[in-house]
Length: 516
Image 1 (tube, helix red, strand yellow):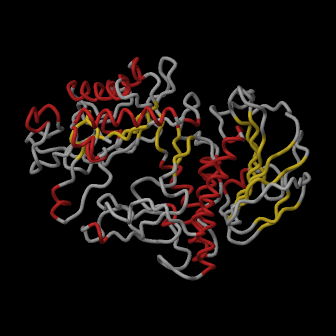
Image 2 (image 1 turned 180 degrees about the vertical axis):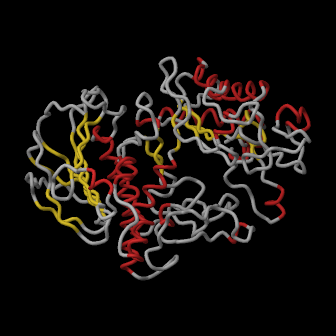
Image 3 (image 1 turned 135 degrees about the vertical axis):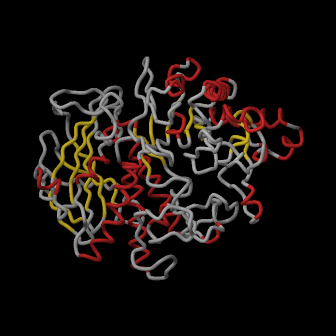
């Protein structure tokens, strides 16, 4: 929503910066997003319309998180246009080496120098203005590692700007989300942003470890198993992500520090992850050089569109597995717009420069897209109504931890898993029982069955103290969400699980006091 312009290169090619990651002004809303009357009336009307939008969203119970790009500006490299800092104080606002050459850790030609006080103060003023005057509820910081680089260029989790954002009274209730990397040396900083401070929750972070392991488990590993007869890795890493990534985020930060995602604006859409092995970016004008080559995707036998119903069914199930994992994991789920119904970008994994049907959301849906939308709605409902899926803290071994979930892990036979189960690439099936530790919500217990092999498997529902029966809530093997018919399954009941699929059950019965 920040005012931006398209890069000169794109304009020469007849393209446009559709995403807006080419900031012109850190305070002004992007005028072309406003209505024509507001644009004609001028900047004050554009701002008033933006504020009015935020107010209406709040009235509807929707918080507004603003994606902010402070790491670079639209002035590009040294040959770029002079539109802001370069003409005011080039030496202060941009990182440069001793010869005046720009140091670029953003991949966009320039890097704002947050080792200096003036840029720090500017960004803090911008955030305070948006939180105070515009009533924005939170911010997602693009390439946030750049904001934490000091005078020597190294990332510092106690950087004055990161700490000032946390400690500012006007920002104390704002949600802070870091994209915890940039393209410079030492740029990958997932898990290293500041935690709680003065009663604040601290920073949350995009969890790329979650993205990579979930994609691999349901897509790349299965593709490898088709080629070589066995997946390269077992289920341990996947389970860690499912449980909130405690090996990435410290206990005091908890699972809510992890913003779980499978897709984002850059990269394949969820549907394309299941339909393309490689990127198809020729339309971007860079001879297919741009965009990531590490997609961890699987086309299920044919690259791109196909009429083969077996392949299409596998793709739909894989998309439901990805969405199901995302919405049933501990942590904060982030869904990319369009994934809820299966939007495709025809294999383009860097569609930043297309303001066209390639990137727009269509309200005309196929039957399969309506079914995916129904599955997503069902999963969101299940997450909302089952607090065991939403722990706010990591459980502490030997203690009852309020607002956490007690987690037990069983194999396909219903026995507690041991070390060999976690580490063997031959084992890609588990049963995950999560029981809430009530803080403000009622006691709740769920069982998630995960099966990451294409052959079907029979599981024995675990026998657990306090559990009296199980009721099936969701099955990723079905195109249409299962209807709860009241059927109860006994402890130890044998249940058939389709290849590469998930099942979610509610575990009925009274609470039994357990220690983590």
